[in-house]
Image 1 (tube, helix red, strand yellow):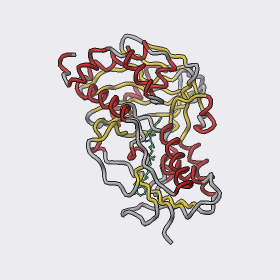
Image 2 (tube, helix red, strand yellow; image 1 turned 90 degrees about the vertical axis):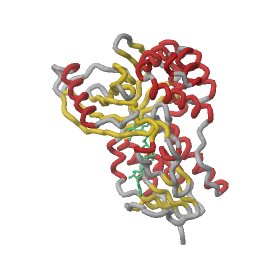
Image 3 (cartoon, helix red, strand yellow; image 1 turned 180 degrees about the vertical axis):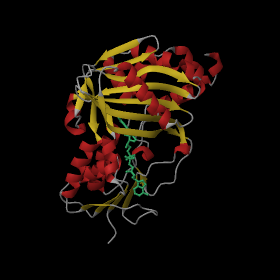
Amino acid sequence: MDPWVHIIGGGLSGLSLASSLARFDDLPGRVVISEPNPEALASKTFSFWFSGDEEAFLRPEYSSSRWTLSDENHRVVHQGTRFQYGTRSGDHFLDSALQEIHNHSQIDLVHEFIDTRPKATHCFDSRPCAVDTFQLTQSFAGMEVIFDQPHGMSEAGLMERMRPTDSGLQFVYLLPLGPDKLLIEHTEFTARPADFSALAALNDRYLSQEFANKPYQLVRTEAAHIPMGFKQRAQHWGIPLGARGGMTRDATGYGYRTIRYACDQIAADLVKYDVARPFRRSAVTTWADRLFLNLIENRPDIIPQILMQISHRMTPDRFAAFMMMRSPSDLIHMLRAAPAKPFTCALLGRYRWI
Ligand SMILES: Cc1cc2nc3c(=O)[nH]c(=O)nc-3n(C[C@H](O)[C@H](O)[C@H](O)COP(=O)(O)OP(=O)(O)OC[C@H]3O[C@@H](n4cnc5c(N)ncnc54)[C@H](O)[C@@H]3O)c2cc1C
């Protein structure tokens, strides 16, 4: 018998769908997840903004109500009231998803690499797309380090020391994971995928400059190229899921919250109606993100200034809601805070007028 559901890839989205299906005791058929290396998920961390009523589902392990952005001259500190910035480790997510799958008699994780479309009533494809299909790329290299003494940081440094490069924008992302642990990631939004070793060298330099007298040990590293929009549509083996299915935000690369909720909805529709509906992001989000990507591609020099102005003029909660693009009104609040000229010129395709 062919499986009822076959999920290609047991990364964040594949396991999210499987664990949402595992909540139903009696499924219409067998569910198979094919994944050659499930443990790879353990080397990632997922951060996101969440409100109190989302905590039980999104399950952050660390959270902070303060986050910051800075360029070479200014710094903005946000203190959220409705939203907090939370982080869940891939390790934690993987453990609980594997437990849920293991406890369900109709769901199996198979350690295998799939090279043709499997036969199943519903097939989901979460294989990552090739980097050369990305419109822009978010490249980052990160180091999680543990200090011998408290590092003294309590807020998440979302985009610190933003500066333009010849192909986009560079910044450092600083995430406290407890009083003595820190994740440091040099990141680029770039038209040409960045060199991981160059970004890793910047992490080393940052640590030696900013924490000169604080010895630390390296806990783990992570590095990735994440899609920021796609130049062309890929061929899918069934319904696309996760980053392949447009569940990561083009303008930011954030995907955890959307993936978790979208996969939960897909699971509910599968069980209730035996129908697999692909994820559709709102046209407004796609349009706004495309405008922003075009600005990065054509005028990277003005991006730090624009982001600083937006974060300075928006309230912290509105900024957080916009980053997760929870409703179309979040975009209106962002556009009201944004400088009018760059966005108007971008709309007209006249980047030199900015
Ligand atoms: C290092 C890293 C950190 C991130 N941090 C954040 C964050 O902080 N916040 C946030 O919101 N988003 C974050 N993201 C973005 C997004 O949430 C992740 O990319 C997320 O993992 C996307 O889920 P996915 O299921 O599409 O892809 P993946 O999790 O990459 O899963 C795809 C899986 O498919 C498997 N696979 C590939 N080919 C085959 C095949 N032929 N057969 C079977 N299996 C196959 C792979 O082994 C892989 O496990 C991060 C991404 C990365 C890479």
